[in-house]
Image 1 (tube, rainbow, N blue to C red):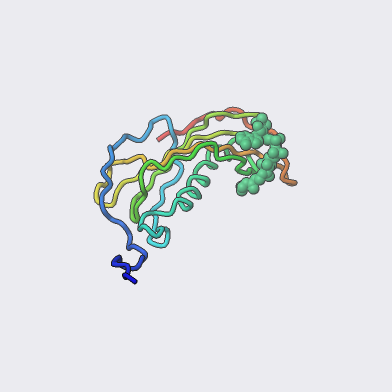
Image 2: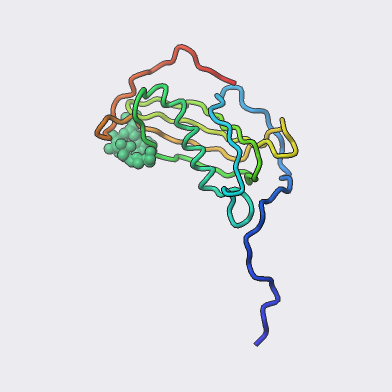
Length: 158
Ligand SMILES: CC(C)(COP(=O)(O)OP(=O)(O)OC[C@H]1O[C@@H](n2cnc3c(N)ncnc32)[C@H](O)[C@@H]1OP(=O)(O)O)[C@@H](O)C(=O)NCCC(=O)NCCS
């Protein structure tokens, strides 16, 4: 019986190769809500960053602006859209920006963009992820409650 000539599958070390992707400006109508740097422990078996780790950061970042309107407990009710446009690499500086899209009776929808500064191209941003999430203001029993703040006096941008 012939033996398989391929080497056994192994975990890859962190992938530090530059990604060929266009640079973009950070959107001026969004608010910078989080900066974070993924570590080797956040990588998947390919050596890139695990998508679930990115999703967790986006969920946290997406909650920042709705929290100002909810003024209390909230829950994520839906991830309406989530697109991984480019891989995220160990050591990237990620900037997560957000924009309120809609305030309903009890729910709020927000857009989140994730931009990476690669380890060797600081100051140049690549859009790696875009998402839209909906949060619901909830009461002490976990039931939806009305969003109490309809307008903010100042909307901070970058
Ligand atoms: C969030 C939760 C309290 C909503 O309860 P519910 O009984 O489904 O609430 P309702 O049907 O009255 O909907 C509440 C709001 O959410 C919106 N909503 C419900 N499902 C939605 C969906 N799939 N997509 C977008 N919005 C949705 C409704 O349109 C409504 O918004 P509005 O009041 O602004 O019009 C409940 O679904 C829940 O506890 N989910 C689990 C949350 C969770 O564990 N998240 C992960 C960790 S934070």
